[in-house]
Image (cartoon, rainbow, N blue to C red; front, side):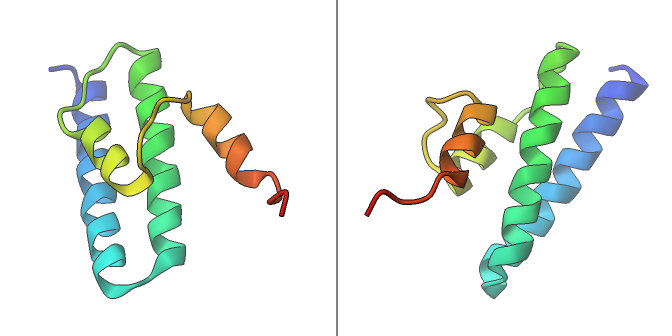
Length: 83
């Protein structure tokens, strides 16, 4: 594994651990920050053809289904509720 892939994998592990801790302690803000970090790491990994085991599953567990591309889901979440 390249140094770049190792660094991405390590950053994903750190962010995933922090996300679990934030979720367990009820810190929604930190959990949102970590999900955003993981989404960005997923983009970088995909751009460089780096597969990070467990990354997709971690994101799915904390964000629901990833049927939409990550950037479109972020735009959708930013839109106000029609209600």
